[in-house]
Image 1 (cartoon, rainbow, N blue to C red):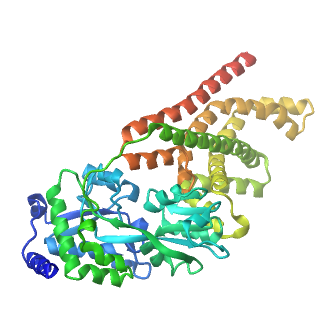
Image 2: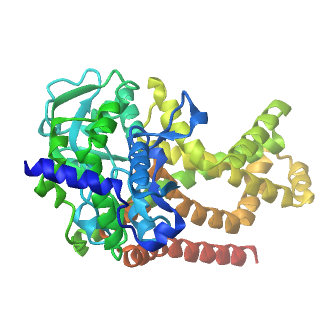
Image 3: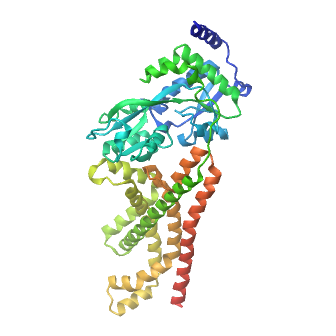
Length: 488
């Protein structure tokens, strides 16, 4: 009886205008942040009808909230990992993108009552047997979406090698390609993506219920209360159930959205205390990985770049044209696209698959070899013609004159610009985070997003980059002075 009375009261309230802060009422709109890259079923562009704009269950939910609050809902694109910061900065008025009201996030923003209860679903690839639960994945590689509940649960499971992805789609692609044994994701995501990946097997029962809630700025309790009231009306009048059934998301747990413990689940303060000891260890591991990738990549880039420069200047015409094409192609296209093509594009071919670290090293080496080739070509052309003529007069062949006369002098001339390139590569190595490599920058982002300590952790990260790059610049200048003394 009480439930019926509450339902009638809320339905009556829905006919009236739900109180909303005046500035939003005057503007006539609410800006809600989300990341369309996250894809189905949240917010995405339907590839079959790209002209119809964005769709998804949260698009439907936003429209219903807007109608109930009598404002227009305007979506603002923001990376998922930075949604909380987007709300804090005022880039958007609220964030609704499958955000989990974790203690760390509750310490930074205010959350509404939950609008969805989700479960975790473990999926494995073809040929993976004897896996029913996360505990059975000991010794296996499991892909997760970074900074999600799936990420946290997988990290807590002993013996599981956790691979962090920017999206669940790429995580599932790696399961199909055999790079990982399985993936842990929210049940709505697993269900929505299953038609694209029918080879995946959902194993075990969905487990560990948790919540999606809307984030608003901590100083705006009135906006939170208005959204709370609107969510309550949509739940009691059956709109939420209609939306979730449309997107195959209605499970038994959704009936609990009206329970007091669920309503209060995302309220209250949180904690973003950072354990500095473990955090520094993680940053140190990321720094070592960054250093290793950068050094190996640049060594390969130097060797390949010199070979390309020599081929362009001294090779036959077909070889010269190939060298020119390589340089222009690699310099004229974004390294991000090159990296994704190398790892995910070629990775779909079994014979060409490689680990993320190897793909990152190769991608950086191939890209920077194009720039190194131009440096070496300029240095080779800068060697006076008389040097080559003198070598020929002494009876040296072209390969001999290059090896003993021309190339050594060209390398000396190219030392300074090559050092600059190495420092640039050192910083650009952060691009490998897009292919699941957790290097220094990615580790910083994960720690900063979890704790909200962007400034302090950012300064520490910058200090680590400087600590690794400054010695390189020092030794390069010292080596240049040594060469100058030798030449004198």
